[in-house]
Amino acid sequence: MNSDENNILVYKDRLQSIYKDLNNKHSHEFNLSVSNGYTVTSRSSEVENIEYHEDMALNVTVYNDYKKGSASTNNLSSENILKTIQKAENISQNTQPDECQGLPESNYTNKDWDDLGIYYPRELEVEDVIEITKSCEAEAFKTDKRISNSEGSTFSFSKNAHMIMNTNGAYGTHSSTDYSLSCIALAEENKLMERDYWYSSTRDFLKLEEGSSIGRKAAERVLSRLGAKTLKTRVCPVLFSPEMSASIISNFLSAISGSAIYKKSSFLVDKINEKIFPDFVNIQEEPLLSNGPATRPYDSEGVLTTDKKIIEDGILQNYLLDTYSSRKLKMDCTGNGVLTNITMGSNKPLVTDVISTLENGIYITDMMGSGANTLTGDYSRGAFGYLVENGEIQYPVTEITVASNLSQMFQNIIAIGDDVDLRNRIRTGSLLIDNITIGGTN
Image (cartoon, rainbow, N blue to C red; front, side, top):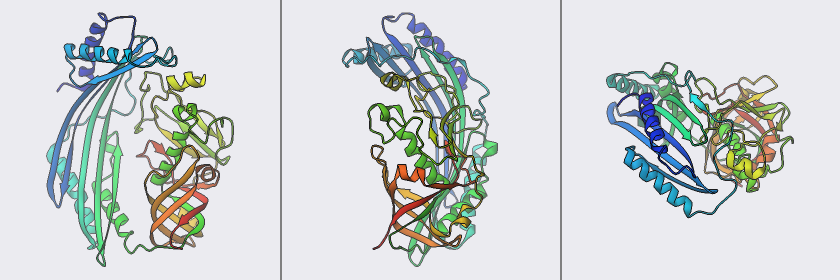
């Protein structure tokens, strides 16, 4: 296969040539993605799996008198592209018109995007990758005799390219790479077994965490779960790990998405310029962050992405709008056909070792189920964590439920930790939140 960039340019010429012969009464959008890479999994010191992937997909969207039709294909011959366009046009003829449908009219990409700090292709020998996965898993087993088994260590690499074109003149391409390494460990004690994991994910192979460190952390995490107990229902401060904090902020972002706002299915309707978080909290979008897991120069419609303040000094500044929702709400489009990198910061210094500041509470590292109602803000999820007393973890706790309301949770944030998780598109440290109901035994 040629490089992704060369493939993209070949298809650019092909699509432009095809479009010249199309019915120009309609508006067309072409979204093309090309990806190739591989995944290697080792388990019990043996290679369990090597998979290669080579994928391409073209999505065609047609707007016909405010009626929309979409079709996709992974066969990019000229003949099949024409069939896909015709299919999208046929679908558009059988949908209801909506005056908010249509291509963006301004602020769209018009160039190839390079030097975004997310494209680091690297030729790796399969033998070296196998050794990386084996040593990662081996480190987990070395940590403690109670590590009785594993679900293996997995290395993944993907090289990706994207192109968008539309009949309003939008054009853009960008490329990216993704590297990840993970380990899943199982531990057993007193005939009870626990499972946990750790992973590293980055755009640049040189920034990937060492396999030995990943295997050791996976082992330490699963060992810390052994001997879990139940506890009685209580209301107390709860410290959420960075991974769990990101999921809470994700619920907030869903509640301010354009579709949730115009459908009035959010508890944050009509809350622009109102205080949602404590005044020390800031949340912003940084779409061009170097090495960012969600970095991209334009959204799914070709609209340019830009830095924006979402929460400033606790106050909601923006909803996240694509072209359609901006027209429905009669507001400016924010380039949020997709969501990019989100950073949560604080006007106060981020706190080191937040657990040591917690006199009596729960530290949550795992939650199950969706459990967040965007309409009402009600929040309830099954969880696993640790009882904390006098700033120290006492023992793991299981079979508990975290229950509150998102609006109250946001307002009750006490502190943000400096343990920011750089692997997630939502970059936040641990969140310490007061007055959370922990459901346990009566």
